[in-house]
Length: 118
Image (cartoon, rainbow, N blue to C red; front, side, top):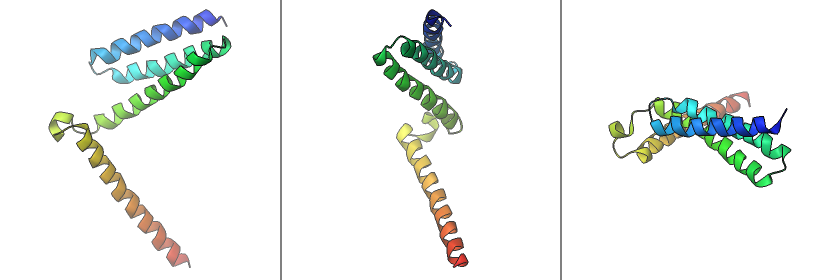
């Protein structure tokens, strides 16, 4: 397949990604999906053309796309920043505390069952 297709398809999806996220109209997940797709397409182009710097950059863009999609789903299930008070730090603390308590319960459960087996 022609390298120009990968290059320009990647550029087009990157442009659409930036517009979708900047518009802030609720289609951010689609935007981050396009960022991931763009990183893959431009990554293929960079690999074939031996553009090592651009290829490395695409790994970071792909990571940002995945993080953006995960955070979009995660924060969609949380209250908004305005509803929670001071903002992201409060949400992050809430989620970390919630996850910590789940981890502690799971650890206690596992230890208790191991002790029963012995």
